[in-house]
Image (spheres, rainbow, N blue to C red):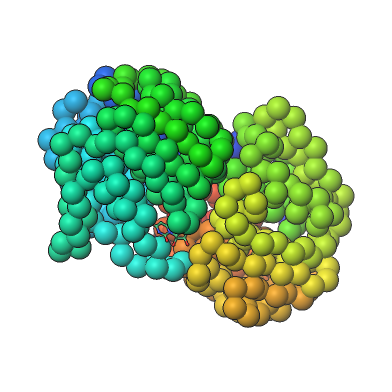
Length: 419
Ligand code: UD1
């Protein structure tokens, strides 16, 4: 397993390009199963989760072609199997996103249950309940969700909890169901909206775009289309924190500031000077150490859970006392123990990580436990004296395209070493 070796202390400076959003491309690739003719997706990030999704679709018999610009063409008319096996689902929970499309278009799906996960139990009961309300027969047997339906029908579904992939699964299923589906308390994350826009381009009839009530009139069929994935707001936020934590000055291109209001607000509170244009964001600390901030995660448009580990790192070296409260997942502070090994004065009480910032962390060997935790340890390493070795970085490759190249472009000293 590869490691990253970071020599901290350099204020990051320069420009980089932001990739397409992981959490948008995954549902969009699954959504391509709904179309009667080929779909072409562009701005696809080069990530292990994308490779896993392609392998999953490929094993089902779906025809995938990648062109020289890394656009992916997907033709699902050659499909032969409707199964998402455990060995793929266990590496990527988002495999569950094939459940709704397979069931709606082909009337059958066998999808392995995702099982446990480093950031909590993460059940999929709301995906199953919603599909049952639309007429699906579902049994959970031998660790698999075994679903079938002649044709799904519309239903009024009130989501008990705001769930991103749950909303996406039901939304995709509803586009080919018979009649009207209303999803209330739907997730409003920009990646859900990107999926909605993609489905509309395929001919789906969806109202309430960007709100918590989605109204879908089912169609007999959807057509192929071309679609460009939106920029990754979490990748954007991570590099902004990299700029802030090193008292640097960075400019991020091919991104969209409108997707990051809550994160930009907290960075401004931390003392960052932020300017934005139509497709870029610039952060300048003017050489200052950040101020500690208080953040609390919640569904969009509030502060994203996928940014809290990075802000825990920021608070660790900030001026003053700060806190990070996690309300979306029950166990998402695995990075705190690793940061403590780097000298951070952070303690977790219930769902909050309280910190007292110190000017510099100390390099250490640390271990990544999930995707965003890995990112936060790299950020901590950038602000540490000496060498930080981040182990188990396969998590990072799931969700950050070429992270060490991008950081090097900003002047960081970071290298990948095979074990
Ligand atoms: C998605 C994102 C992930 C992000 C998360 C929250 C993708 C591929 N992943 O994950 O990066 O951290 O949203 O923004 O888009 N829940 C249930 N029952 C269900 C489903 C969810 O109780 O059937 C609960 C979860 O345990 C959690 C909360 O709902 O407490 C939110 O989870 P959810 O939005 O579903 O996360 P994901 O869609 O898995």
